[in-house]
Length: 97
Image (cartoon, rainbow, N blue to C red; front, side):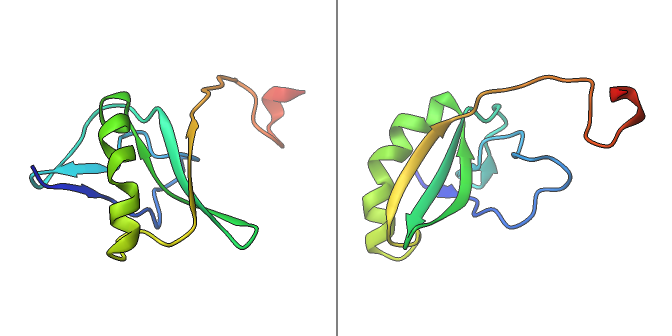
């Protein structure tokens, strides 16, 4: 099985991509993101993608190999669970008054 990670550059108005960043056999996973993948280097942290629960364990095993072959930047890889927050209020919005 060939697994690829979509390295994030721009994903529209959302703060976090709504779908998993994994591509398997040429098709992007359609499951909801549950974890953010980032790389910590020189006191800087860079978000590189998101994972669903189904792909979390498999991808975590491949991280070191992907760093060795240059597919992911060197540094400590951090997996952080996404904690959804729902609000009707937006900063500088009249509905927050």
